[in-house]
Length: 390
Image (cartoon, rainbow, N blue to C red; front, top):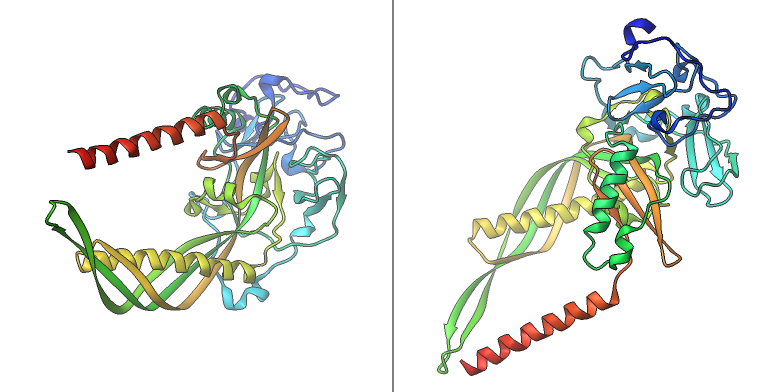
């Protein structure tokens, strides 16, 4: 690409500092500090030779030294295309395991995390625990079909974290001003599944009726009825995380991702970030996906039964489901990982790198909990007193 045409900021090219120190105002948008001896023409600035990183705000590669920007060529047309759906029945044949050709897997000796970097962009710092005890694992891994690019910047993540923490009702007031540690931008592995489902179900639904006793008290009685039938639903992009190292309760709080916005995989989107290698196989992920799908189908059938019979309650008592035309995608999804310390205890949290949704754990004030319980008890006591005295 023509350097002059892609230099959005103009001006003469500047040489990057020899000691790799980066001005705070020009820090790269990613979390990986350029290392001495960095190679790889794809990530080198053509103007000054500095290390470039993917900028979530602009969706381009960015050089923090001379402010040069470079668009990422779209592999699937003007909209960039998206990852292809792969036939699940041929999963072993479709599993292209040559990602190790231009990537390298490393294992952290300190925390055990296994991450994948572009072979020419290897950081010497673990994005999870900050340790520099990294060793190559020697493993090859299946190449991702697509990537959901970062849309939330480091600064955006910090602002959203601060708002999230201040909104924790049960957090002690002093904890709400806790400063987050370093934010690490990481792509984590996800499997997504599409399938047509056909279910045979048995259910029951209940209708409430009220009656008044001789003392004038009102009672509610539910009459239950049985029903059965068939239900069809197409499942699109059921998401299953491809790693077991994270707190899934926290991951659940920042989901879902909008998988429709994925781009055909290009290592340029990973510039400046780490990517975690999957440890959950596609076969195991499908078994987990079926658990999620079953819960969804159960909820949807119960909703349908209530609507059909104008009922107040419903529950599925038996459900048999068949799956056809199962396809899958292997995607990389963005998260910002950080933590804060309060009273010598570390609290981890994450920010969805696409949507900005925050999830994590925060300290709980025992006094606030006690006051809430006391308030609820007082309210219940007042209601009971009013019931029997009026």
